Image (cartoon, rainbow, N blue to C red):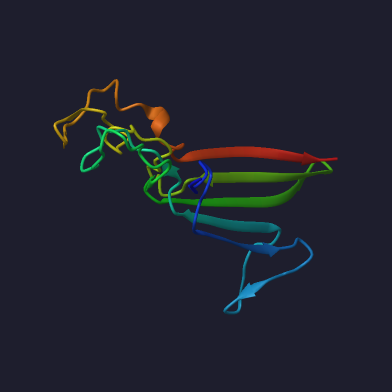
Length: 160
């Protein structure tokens, strides 16, 4: 019997969130100057170590005798970092309460790796010849190996 990490094992994770909210019933002032009311700003961050993966026998610098199996999930993907921002502004129009929303996911457009080729440990190539990793083709640089990039959403909510 042996122990090994599960595919979903994230060893370290730092998650934080902060929200500022100024209700419409308050008349705020900053350094004596009036500022708008009825808005909120939320910032969320998630920083995690990479999940494990199992290298193949072609992986560079793997010493393996023919009778041994490669240890399952013995290597890890690179760390990931995501920062999201959401801004909402409340207003009233034609007797209806409205919220304008701007939501930016992955604000810094980080290219977070979610899958790698087992022969190279890289998301952009599986071209490994005699323990030397070469650049791959456009086909091998699969966009599915990366998490989503920056996404900007703009919307309008109506509260009846």
